[in-house]
Image (cartoon, rainbow, N blue to C red; front, top):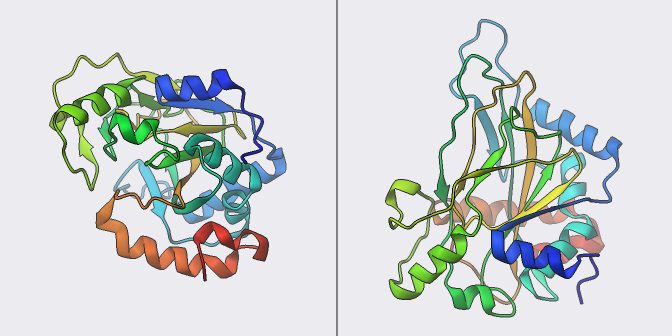
Length: 261
């Protein structure tokens, strides 16, 4: 059974709000090393060089030990098992993101959902859904591009899915969602080394980094081993290839995360 020290009120918060942030066993050296790798993978434009985007990311294409050691850490697996109410999970995907400073821009954000879940998906054991785990590599405050989210919106959308089932294979913007009375968006704040468990079935999205320092984060996603989940199907082939390529980069005792060889 899951072994993570996870108080019942924290699981209740996840279920009610769609996210919960907790401390992790990662050392400051581990987090600093991972942040350095993200800088190497996602270099900022040189002075005077135009930037195509102020939000840089890479998905399912890196094998740096400093990042993979976080992905395969037993704490991460155990947290995913606890959230998904199962003894066995499968690695689904990962990506790193860096939001570059835009101190001259006003704060703003854009919103979407990635997956659709019904109430039954949430209440089943295991949960028939993806859990996202965000490992924060820097302190995140209001001017460091916090993730914005609408607490409880996943439950509202699940109830809507119960009434009007709809397949959702890829992310859609908030403007395409049913016109529900969603709560106001709030920022997700965290300290470097903390981990946030969240559902991307809630309304959420990236914001502008109005401060002087970039935001850096590693996202790791899991599903129940017993229940394949359809999500982000546009990247299905690339995701499957990465899962296969990842196996030799995992310790032998952690290779079960990507399923049978």
